[in-house]
Length: 165
Image (cartoon, rainbow, N blue to C red):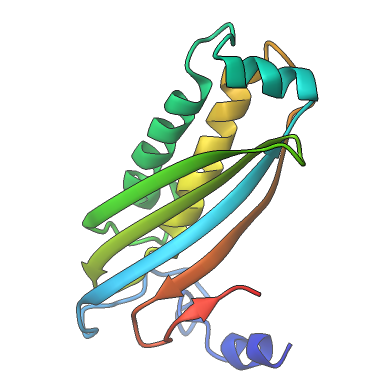
């Protein structure tokens, strides 16, 4: 809770009049920055089995979702109003089966060398990958649940490294 109150005393996305602004990062040093985000997609066992067998009506559910996540990371600045467009050097999306859900665990790793971080790009990648998985499988089940979209870790930049608990 202390970290929240310390950070909220100076909100960089607000100007002196309280208006939203894009932060000026031109004075920052370009460094290697990386972020990992994750999400879970839970579904019925029957839906999971159909996707795993490659028998979904719309085709390659996991491949399409993975590609959508990669493409989404590259479009983050067009989707989130105050994000800086960044040169992404690596975007990796993995979708792993999880029998305990049942469903899938999605992770995205995004890397750049820039003046600002790539947390939003990683979060966008897992979000869109999860939404695409839903879209590709909704003919099988409407109750698929996307959950726990979160930042797992980040490195680089002035604020230092972060690792979720």
